[in-house]
View 1: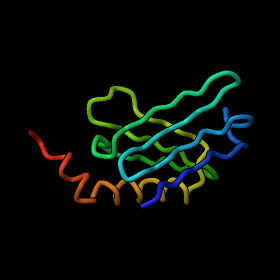
View 2: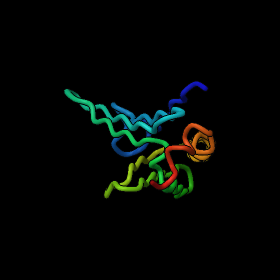
View 3: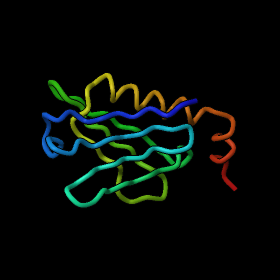
View 4: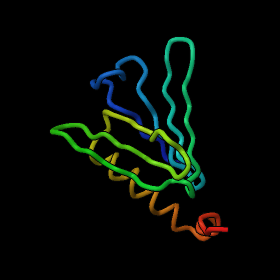
Amino acid sequence: MASEIFQSSRWTRGNFLFPTRIEITPTAVVRRKRSWFSMDEISIGIYKVASVRIQTGLVWSEIRIESSGRSDPLLSRGRSKSDARRIKELVEQYQALPENRANMRPE
């Protein structure tokens, strides 16, 4: 299974020059935010994702991915509604894979 990358709209706050990107892979969710001289990257293992919350406005959606064991959620604004739904769908699909379900079992 290949990874998918989703980019925020440049018309939203904080994304004009350097739009935030979210990459969903079978093993992790990665959020990348560039600035002039650096890049902020946050990664959460698929098996650690506790919930995916989508808050939709008139045009754009905000997606909040919370993980077990991490205090601050992965937050991204300026997503299209279809991208936000696809991100949630992919996370749920990858969590259902047998190799990821084995990591979710309590020890």
